[in-house]
Amino acid sequence: MPSLSFLYPLLAIVLWAGNVVVSRLSAHAIGPQAITFYRLLLAAALMSLFVAAPAWRNRAAIMAELGRLGVLGFLAMCLFQSLSYLAAETTTATSMAVITALTPLLTVGLGAALLGEPPTVGMAGGGALSLAGLVWLVSGGEPARLVDGGLHAGDGLMLLAALAYALYGVLLKRWSLPLPVWQSTYVQALCALAIMLPAFLATPEPARRLDAATLPLVAYAGVCASVVLPFLWIRGVQRLGPSRCAIFMNLLPVLTAAAAIVMLGEPVQPFHLVGGAMALAGVAVAQMLRRPLARARRAEG
Image (cartoon, rainbow, N blue to C red; front, side, top):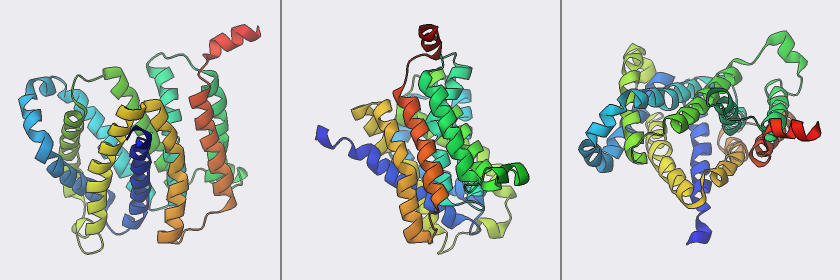
C-alpha cells in the first residue's frame, strides 16, 4: 500500500541502529578487519544467489566501470565499516549514531566542494548548528575539554568514517554509474572483499576466530545490515524519493540510544540530548533551506 511506503526507510533505520549496537558488542570480541571481511563474505555469498547471473550477463558494462566500483566499495564497505568497528572500542553507541546521522550534511558540504554545487543558506546555518552540537557532544558538554585533551579517539574515528561515507555518496552521484543498483552493490562488495583480504590475513588468529559470541554478530552484519537494509532503503527511495528518505536518518540516534539502554546498559547523559538535538537540527535546516547562499546575500544587499 502506498500509505505504508514509509515503512521501508523506517525499518532500514531500525536495522542500522541495530548494526551500531552490534558494532559496540563486537568491540574487543573480534578484530574490526575480521568482522568487516566476514560480513562482506556473507553478504556477497547471499547476493550471488540473485545477482551473480544478471551481473555476468552484464559483465561488459561492469568491467568498464570496475575501477570506480572498486573505489566506491573501498569507501563504503571497507573504510567506513572498519573505522566504525574501530571507533566502537572507545566511544558510545549513541555518539556513533549522532555522528553517522551527520552524513547527509557532510555529503552536501563535500558536494559543494567537489561538484561545484552552490552552497545554500541551510548548509551555512545548519552546518554551524551541527558543528556546535557535535562539539557539545564529543566534549561531554564541556567544550573547553577539547582544547585541553583534544578529540576523543572513538569520536574522531567515527567522524572520519562519516566523511568516507559522505564522499562515497558524492562520487556515486558524480559518476552516475550506468548499472542496476543491485549489480553495482554486488560488485562493490566483491571489490571490497578483495581489498580486505590482506588486512584479514594480517589479523592475529585470536582476533578473527569465530565462536558462539561472534557468529551472531557476523550474521546480523552480513545479512540484516548488508543485504536486507540496502533492499529496504532502495525500495524506500523508489517509493518516496531520496530527500524524504534522508529525513529518516534523524531517527538513527534516537533508536540507537533506546537499543543501547536496553541491550548495552549505556546511560544517556544530558550532553547526548543537547548535542544530539543541535546536530540533528542542523541536518534538518540544511535539508529544508535550499536557497543558494549567494542569492540570499544579493537580496540582502
